[in-house]
Image 1 (cartoon, rainbow, N blue to C red):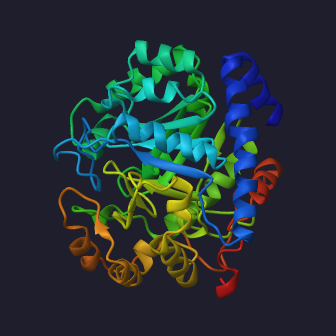
Image 2: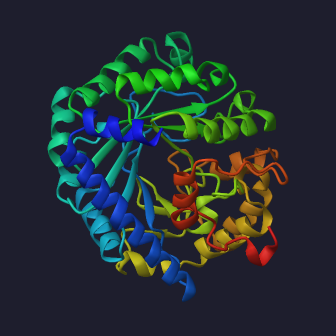
Image 3: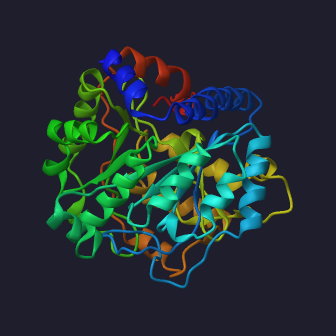
Length: 401
């Protein structure tokens, strides 16, 4: 499998883009995690990976979306974006996940990212606005990887995304990326109505045949103003995802990402460990994209690193999350999350201003934490990489979890 993957990289990619990935994400990303470890020893938290929702607008209306995509457009001003990326780089970071809404509705986005060639950007997108011109620009930049969301067949996609003809437009954007030899990924938010359709070997093989280099299976989170709890996966289905991913990593020449497990298969929450946090379109510094509350903002006059390190809200969130579950505190213990938010008077970071009401209405649900049913990595490469660079960093140890 490793030789097959190497062959794909050699024959199917632009080698300059591979070099950018290796340096900006690989070497610099590893150094960023090492700095994170050093900061932890001093009791300082600044995440090595930042996720940024650059705007709230979107051209689709997906089921269960927690973003106010139909509200008046709010986007992070260009000067704030540059300052945020620059100060994160000064703190040793090099990787940023770019979210929305739909990021490509931000007309200046690629021009902004192009001014930071020393960093690496993963853009989470529905792909419909990726023209050949944008794909060509991303290839020229070299430090951007599009992660295109595909939610199922034509019928399923239309239902999931709230519009008709969604799949064909998404696939056209995906093909534009592949035509220009971008290091391209495909993601799927697995839920009750696309689980069987997307979690299968046939779909993985199709991605490989198209030239996709990595994929990512997200787990649907029933949150927001229209949570659609009927779409949530059962505990058995969540375990099935983990088993499938571990098995496919040993057999298929495509990288498969997950963000919820370490090398031993123990569950973790990236926000609880402090390895990543989120910036909203209003500049609010939030624990993660589905916790839409903040006490601090990137517009603060302090250096970004100091804002994170000195945040009592983020500190208490991490402790509350790590002390209660290795899974998702939002799903499992919304009551504890409410307590942290109220203690610090954290502001509702939504346009609709109903996030607390939504949180209060939630009933506890299972997440990725299933004690006693851990599925360790079988692939030596994934096991080593996670052991070194993606683990819980001792966050749960004080609480015996």
